[in-house]
Image (tube, rainbow, N blue to C red; front, side, top):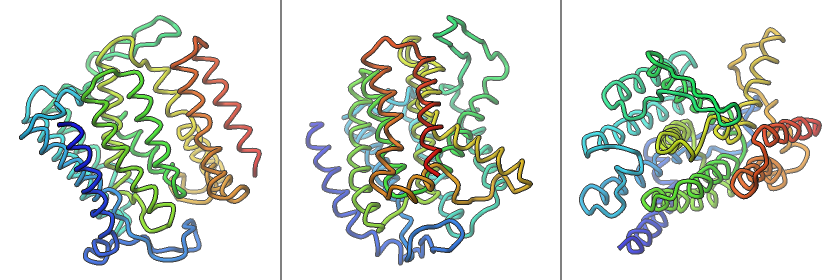
Length: 336
């Protein structure tokens, strides 16, 4: 039965992406090029999040009515009500992202709305609250006690900001999301999670084809949804077992986009510039300018792909892997 659903998702995405331009015209959702930061030459549809929401909605429907994937267990949800609540949160983030794509909301405004959404979600369904931080390197566990809600909201917000800043050139985000999904498929042996990640990868393959041809972007609506879904998957894998994924490993997975975000934030701050104002000083912009699209993307995914191999198939200390990532980042920065 799973094969039939997988084939159906492949077919649905085929026709869904065919109407990409029509959907963008209908709702007037385009990324308009400018000379400040954007590199594309013509208005490009921002349907990435909309199309992925359709995928998620169909997966939820298949799960609730046909119980094919046991999606509830993928996200660690205890019942259909929480499953529907998760879908409502995704829809809320989609609407927020579409509004942001259309009128460019102020950073403080969209961050506040996102925090309210996460607060309501985590207050109703507490299954995603992070109650402790487990450090393998130091064999140490830090209990969060009454700070669990605040810390978990902060985690959701951090990933949203990181992925939003990292979505800069074609193929970049899709490649990065795919590697994270592949890593979760390796370390978490749940069949339901494997199927869910596989279906998401099918979507990302379709998206990458159109994104490479500059016919489709994720937009803020896509970034908001993907950051939320990946946050859920990472947190659930973290909560599933003490040995599946630990704090240092999550840090490794997010290292390059996190360190790039921090570099830009403080460099803008020290230069008396708005630390939240977009520019072309991201690592991906630097690599794109020097090496072109394909080579830039290969260089961008090398640190994460290497880290995944080292984490899963060697016994190298995780601190060494973090140091390798740091040296890789500094070396790539020299490209400018």
